[in-house]
Length: 192
Image (tube, rainbow, N blue to C red; front, side, top):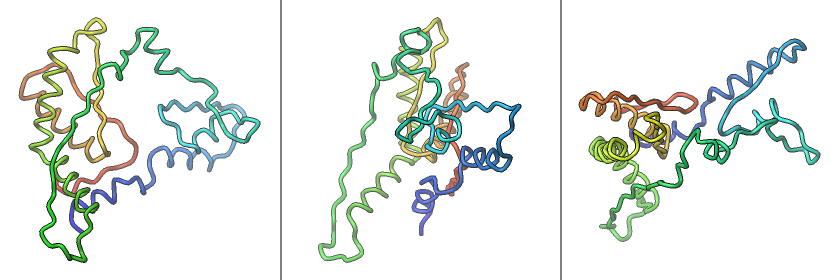
């Protein structure tokens, strides 16, 4: 198994993440009558909803309160991220050189090639240059200069690589803003 395949396998979230560990710890202590627990998350798992949510008649669980993105946008706390959503598409083609190669699986080859291209430093650096230039020229002074931008990546490994590249670019250009990456669990990058 090569480094790219190993990273792909580890990035599927098979390992126990932080949310799983917190729930495990809470369950081990049992219910305590003088303690209240609250969970704040943008994407609750079913286990989190079962622990902190309210049980419905049909057996499902719902959060006891929601502060929706729509409400935050209407109140001016955040901007509508979908209003200016832009994808960055990559185009490439793979040619099969050997017609009767039993080892060849086109879908796997495309997936690995695309992942290699997407995680390559050159690709990331070019995307970051475009993203930060757009942020500096068009976004940063929105919301009275308190604007933030969000970059959604394909995987936790992509998030780590982008975070490192963002920090390097920001330092090289002496910008005053900073980056933050958020995900649960641990990512092992075999390239570093």
